Image (cartoon, rainbow, N blue to C red; front, side, top):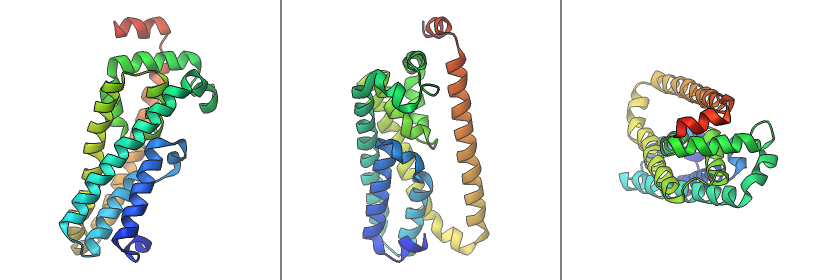
Length: 211
């Protein structure tokens, strides 16, 4: 945060938009701090004394970038198709598991994509898997846009408008960070657990549930 605050709003914009795009579009995004970066960007903009328009503009543009990034990830997954199973590892996404993922997306795909925005790692892999599983493109686009609108502005504006409160009560920053870490670790664990539960279901049970 100190490095961002000393380089001006332009650098904040470049870093945020680049990281959001990479995290939403490519596997390399697994290692990028999307949630904490968005929140920190809001804090930095507030500390720099920028106008509210800066925070809202960054929220809107970053939301669009997040949608475009996820759409690119979907297209890459769609084109890779079944070959994605080998690239992500047979144990993680075998041909059988890809078929189960397709059934799962048919049943709960909309909310799965929306909620994936809030779960690190899963929000990066979800577009690739949705594309490889041939999830309906319109349904996917609606879901990923909804998720982006709920994800990006919430974190950026929470950091921006909460900066004043955090300055008055410094201990709140530590509390927010701890709660954030717990939330995202728990969310990741829950997402992995749900994935494993779905993948353990027999194929015929998944199909029957879908019906």
